[in-house]
Length: 250
Image (cartoon, rainbow, N blue to C red; front, side, top):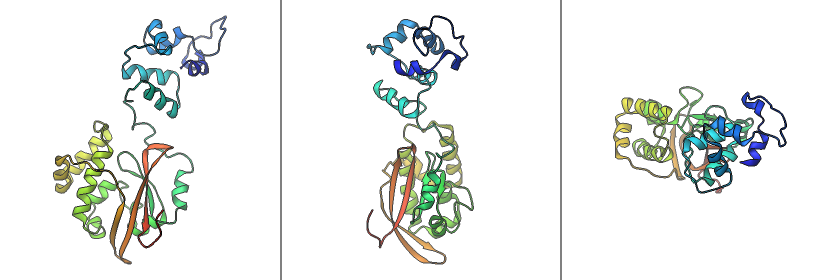
């Protein structure tokens, strides 16, 4: 925290530069003022003393110190405190070049965010899903439960759909109060009796790999093995790849 404090100047937060500033960055008094805590308390925090600090204070410290994503994660890990904004960070745009990486993958591939919005996909994925998500709403849950085409495409649709609900519940554990998640769940409950029934079961399972089969309108039965990877550059997102079941394993 001391090194992060040295990187942030008073002008970054609209404070006068003052005089006789012997060290770079914010003074402890200035940082404490910006965070709404006492200087003594902040000093104890910076010194690593055993003090009780709420999540809100850690959030304010991270914001005032302008910590990077990695630094913020490290701060909350050291504090043994859950970041209340985890999963709501960087929820819109993907980092530059990431969509191009997906496009360069030879097998069907796509990226899902926390709410299972499809943020990027490639041409093989469009072919397997017969034009989705380019045509239609780019959310996997919406497609599975509210698009009639999904029932025709996904083999053993009801079984797969039931498992997807349990996977999604496990995926958003700790973020169920997020407004985007709540709106999506409410929409799915209203539009799909199967989703509503499965959601009330409160079953949870990991998003594991395995055989995924589709009855394609032009190509007939297609079989893939699904692999899912968390993205270090976007921890709230995952890359899903569908490898031809006849191909060697990754």
